[in-house]
Length: 606
Image 1 (cartoon, rainbow, N blue to C red):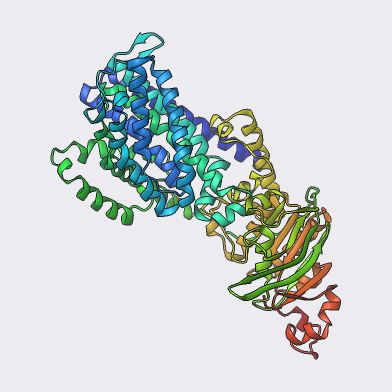
Image 2: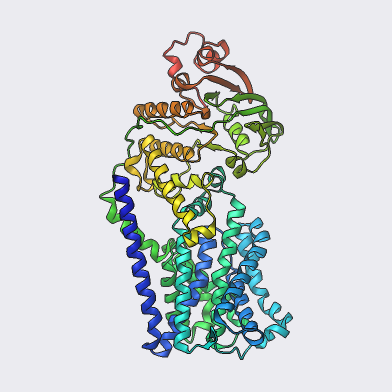
């Protein structure tokens, strides 16, 4: 009943937002008929530049890759439209479609090498593209008009009818509104949370089956669509296109508007663009001091407005909600069986790995069978986490092989191994800035994939998967005792509760093999008891569990077998009872031959 209530509340909020957006769009589309011409033009410029900035927000704010290439895509759309209108077909919808396709293609072509560089190298290389625009335009003078520009672009036509200024302004508003619906649909979805995870932690993203490079490339390519569409509309605005309209100053102004409005905000785009259009860009002296102004602005805004104006508004709302926030403590694991798990055999065969001559692993061999918990113990530096990283694909072994269900995965990329059914938790919990529900749902990317197009269009498959995500996440959070913090910011949870959240996230991926790296660290006695129950249920449901743990009492309670590592080598593989009484284990890990049963409950350092 609670789930039905929260779902109904979510639908009601969505309906109110949709109604408000439709109302705002209708008012803005009608405004050109009663606004003065100068103000109507400003509104059109805000809409056009809003399209360009939204593309930057996708690649920078959401995917975490700073690029200055938006003006290049903007220019491409403008020149494509001008050439079409002058020489082939003059229809605003056809021009938008062709320009958007060209922007997508340019984003793909420039993104393939650019994203391989990444970081500041991508920013610098994309800035070079902006500097090349005048030279490219000059080289293609036959089609672009060269540095003198391309004039005489006819008034836009729509389905054979010439549009007046007011009608064209309304078309700009409608096109911008439609794109922002698609943009918001992408951001406010599991795809959007995947981008948030990827931006903050590519390692975590890969462990969830998210292809880091391919996801960034898709997002970067899609970011070219609104920029090129904006260029198409800009070409019709004045009937003239020149390379000066797409230079470095424009690139920096786009970045400034993004930072000011909020690089991760959907609607903050319009705030940032509006302040730039009606503010400094209207002063006569601005052109002479543009670089100085933008430099000062970016420094000040980058420090004082890290999340933009939209971020400030969100901080205020968060403070207002803080007094009613539910305490983030565990509610205890629910006594309910997990769905059947398609557990598969994990086989580690003679795996070796060295770092600069230091041997971390040496011919390590063991297996984990479906329906079995195998514990991996050993002192600090014994190679436990290194071994997990080899299994997950973060490290390539120097020798040996790893297979899942009989299929070798040695040397494959981490996201591909995750898609084979390997899920894990981390020694230090990796929790992005998401709600608890979002942080768990993002792990279902592998289980129920939905394309970017289906997400943006809110297709039937997207809606079915979204409902399934909600049910599955609610069940998992209840199973680990976190049902009462579903909508709480994940980063507000204490350490122990974050570990339970990580476990729920790993289970959301329906893993065939589950790797738990010190999952009990930081938990109190009640939480450890709940964790014991959950892992038993995972085993009973058919899961294959490899448990790296220093709490030997938990190891003795859960493990079917224990693998003891020392200096990267397997010392012993046996039952917990046999391991606890083995002379070498007693000597080095449990305090000496005289250790009592109480000593077995002390930490086995790892």
